[in-house]
Amino acid sequence: MRRTMGLMLVAVVAAGTALAAQTTSLPKPNKFRPHAIGFGILATLGTNWTMEMGEVGYVHRPKRGLAALGVAARGGTFIDEGAMLGGSQGVVFGAALSARTRMKSIATFGDEEPGTGIGFDLTLELSGYSAAKSPMSLGSQWVGVSLLPALSMGTGDSPHFAIVLGPTAFFSAGKAMLRGMVSLRGEAPLARKERHP
Image (cartoon, rainbow, N blue to C red):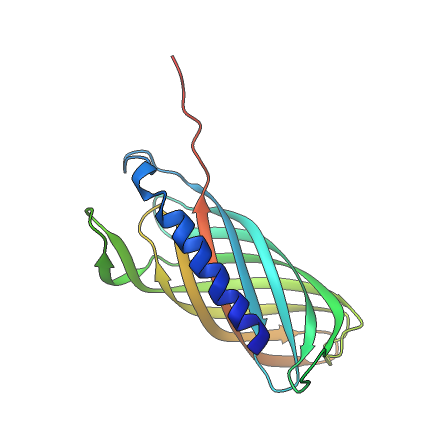
């Protein structure tokens, strides 16, 4: 986990800086962009073996109701948090379906109206995993159900970033396991194709 946190921070700062530089070229609010690409780095929490993964996926942002519906692919490895050097074993792949509530804004910043919002939202996630050489007691295949509160930044269909931390329940044929999950996630809206007369 400690190795991943540094990478997470660097990735979010770099992505945030690059997307913030593009705010002057964002389309007008009446040009709603419902499609986005999602990306992130996530890890389970624990004192022994944990999973550390990257993810990329597609996000749909409805005009009404939920803020986002997403599907993502994940890939990573298992890390022994007790090891000083090395400590990685096996590979794990997964897929996830998610639904995110609209953000409850607590502050805004920026020179332009309405500004960029900062607040809290909640993601419900259903995931499935398949692993090779897994050191965890879940076996080679399992599913997960997550309830993930987040501190988020972004307004409307602009780029969205979040620090996510919450519980995940993993279920397999052998046993169930409850772990915490931490993630840094972002969404970048896909460009809308302009129509020419």
